[in-house]
Length: 206
Image (cartoon, rainbow, N blue to C red; front, side):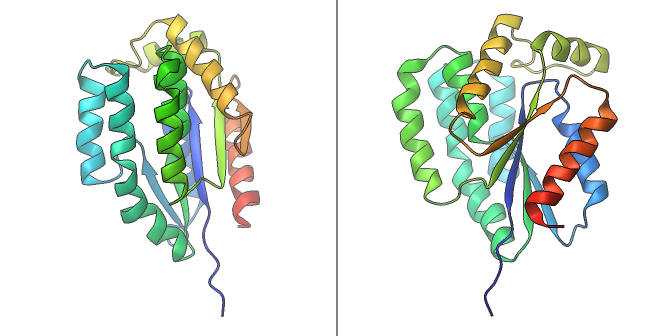
């Protein structure tokens, strides 16, 4: 009997759009026996250590980009591939779209694009997301939400509005050529959670 692979779904969006809240909601709605949740940077021991470096240390955009690609084979081999091959669905918070939006467009480093595309191609030979779900929100509103949250902000969240507007534009450009659904996050929490839940149900057939 043929084994049906699970789906690899990525939740994307700029800082402050509510990705964490959304993932928390999905965890309450879908059985742990059918879904696996992970995040980037992070997900594995290696990924979490890289996360600490990325969020806490100033570095060049090229270093940022290379560090993001460095942990991805680990997360694919240890989490994503075993899960989907066993028929489970994977919900991943952030993926390659973030690297394009932040390090290429946000940092205004178009000269890094050839290297980015080469590494994206290599990873694509291992695993490509079945669907990106992008939470779209005006960066000014997102920043206000972050301030109201009262949590300590990392160095990306502390970047200025111009940077985050470039990041948003980068996401939109990336999703012109990648399978995605854009969700309006400039609404109250309830309708956003319901819409994304329905998108996941449709994609997975659950």
